[in-house]
Image 1 (spheres, one colour):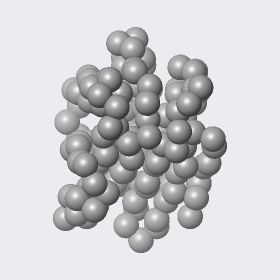
Image 2 (cartoon, one colour):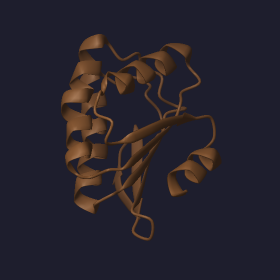
Image 3 (spheres, rainbow, N blue to C red):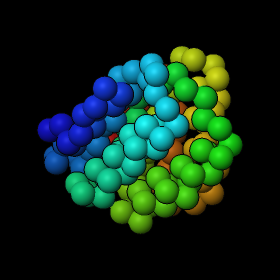
Length: 132
């Protein structure tokens, strides 16, 4: 079931596995404020639906995350999903090198190990890790 959709991202949730899937559709013309809104929509959906596993497909995310935005992500997104009880977070990394590196840096800024995080190049590999 789709829980959120915009020009930039679509979020869906499956009750059976407490699984949330977030897919970046496009980031053409996106601003930092809009990135924050989309990231918080993802976190809010985790909270509202009680997701325990999350998969973010960032292959279409072409936006360099500044160091300040990385800190904001840890303080706002990670704190919220950790408090909500998320257990595993899989990320399909962007094919854009600058986006790839900045996503990895933002995730690595989170020092709380209560959410296991792993990077993948395919959805199939990510789902295998999430559900096993």
